Length: 429
Image: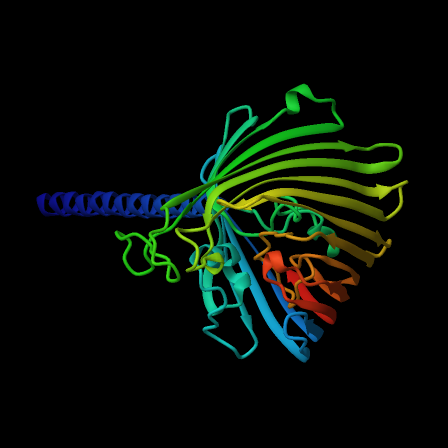
């Protein structure tokens, strides 16, 4: 009897010990599952902060150029075909509701051609980014931080910003506006700091008004020694370390009018001083020649005029510029853009350009292989037809046709006639 009581007690002890161990095992499994679920939630929250998108473009252009040199009297002709690829990957991060980081990793290259030198002076190379067609190396075309105030009226930005691709460039492919500043102000990639204010609380429901101020310092340092000054190769003189650039852009937009879906007025004032350009130095003149200029760009844009697919815009640029110690030059330039977008998305359009003597534009971030937008004393047309397809594919065919006179002020000795056909394939993802 005593033996059976001990045996029963031992069995009960083993049973309860097993239950305890089983409960402990179950608890550990539950804790492990909770930890795993928590990690999945954290990972999901982290991934939700990231936004990925991109653009893939292939461009082929038939080059047909005739020129006459007014100094030497020589005639020349250039014919050929250029093929290029440009790809950009956008990785945007929502750090918080009021702080975001934007970046674009991009590559631009000629087909089967790498390590192209392109622009030698560092400031212009920076303005071009991947659009300089340097090769298969990846560059940052965008990398900036934007902070919004709590009411989202004030905004501040720091870094490499969206200073290229401004209106009316987006209308060529029927896209939304991505670049901030009008193309006829500049179309280059700039680094700096910006501040702006959105007057949405003071405007009617169908109107918006935004003011932006963008500060860009240009730094001139030795190409191989960051602690040494830069000396000009032509004159041997030391280059001033920094030159400042300030742009002020005011944007007024009115939507849902009886005669147009949207009416946009952009006014941009741009000033820079003591800008160094290695190509404009002369050993026969004492000291370094620095540039200064003040310019104003007015952009007027209409979208869906009279409830149709017709869009139109006019850009006007007025500049007063000078090299230190010389008389100033003034010039005007005009860019007109007309397009009609059909119901299925096809776009038929034209751009008309006219530039004066001494005309200059910081247009370093472009895909085409001609000087339609940057040549002084130029009159021409750009005709295009855009066809969208499934899966965000876009094909555009076009013709750049222009004639430019010689312009000694810009060291342009040639009269040029250009007729370039092109085809561009683009996909956004």
